[in-house]
Image: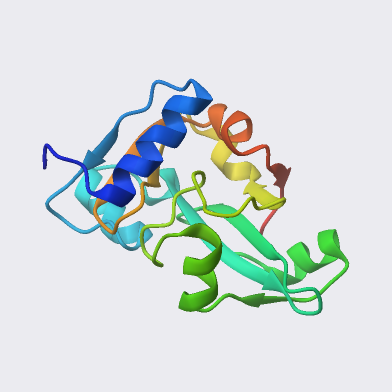
Length: 160
């Protein structure tokens, strides 16, 4: 484990501290860019990895954050039914503009711009221990499944 946090990871730690959660951001030597890499590096099940995926609404261009279990694939049609609007996968530029982070290190909190459309995979809440990205492709933090709603104020939905 790396002792000093990268600037992006420190901003996530600061956001966690502001929320009052006792979560510690960890910088790792190995990559946690994908759910499978993260699970392998952390020695946990891939379902315990929180994937933070950024989409945007097609017409209004509003950011949509989907927090999905690492073992689940997001059914975009389901999200569209909740929104009443088609969504598109956000590109790297839009993602960085909204979140302040690069794809592969997007945390569920601490974004540059407030994201009002947040959907949480119900499967994540069934797990006691989760791991989420913390601003870089090798920074993570551990949290309880029940804390994900409090942390993000997202809407719990079925994603698959």
